[in-house]
Each structure stands twice: as structure tokens, then as C-alpha cells.
Image 1 (spheres, one colour):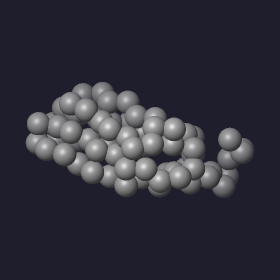
Image 2 (tube, rainbow, N blue to C red; image 1 turned 30 degrees about the vertical axis):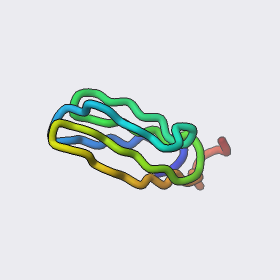
Image 3 (cartoon, rainbow, N blue to C red; image 1 turned 90 degrees about the vertical axis):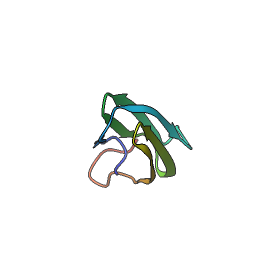
Image 4 (cartoon, helix red, strand yellow; image 1 turned 120 degrees about the vertical axis):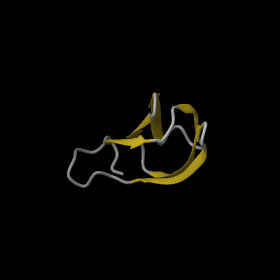
Length: 71
């Protein structure tokens, strides 16, 4: 995902917790069954989303926005 953009992930059950390995790269907000990601800085990080249904593990790559202004 490009720096400065937002991506929303919908889960099958309410999200109980979200863990980001490197929070300087990715801002995360949980809203019921949704998790909202905002790319803050370039790099890769791992994310674990926990719900009553189990865990979802993600590997997120945050890239420079080639169409935007430098951050």
C-alpha cells in the first residue's frame, strides 16, 4: 500500500486486538469488524488481527506514493 493511503479490512467477527510489529510504518484503528490501515512510512511489517474466530496474520508492504508529494 502507498504511504498516506488508507485500506480497510473487514473481518467475519468483531476485532478484539491488532498487533503491528513496526507501528512507525503503519497506523491501525479497529472499528467493530473492521481494521483500518494507514501507511505512514516505507518498509514492511507484520500484523496480527485477533477475533473470536481466531488470528489473521498479514505481511504489509508500505511503498512510496509515486504520484504524491514526498513525505
